[in-house]
Length: 142
Picture (spheres, rainbow, N blue to C red):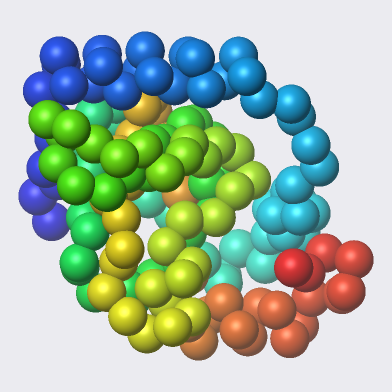
């Protein structure tokens, strides 16, 4: 699979926006962190690992929503529209989910997601995700 990539100048713009965003954020508990911990401790057959470099496009708006991702490491930007005038919806980092709404609603992706730095994702098919949730103790599930 060939991965698309944005230009270095487009990446710099997104990184500068991310720096402002990051400074304004107040860290809070993330429910997916316990899911990551459970995966690391014996459920490695329930996901596929994928890696992206800075500037690589993880998913595009309007693509089919066939997988749900949990970010294992790194930061991403989520936006609508094009990179000339993006509507930034947010930033996601370790322990957070991306692509879940398209998967759950069986609709095309509603936004584009780009890696801001090296990103490792755990990808779950709908079957893998729901199977994992049924097998995981309540303290580690979402």
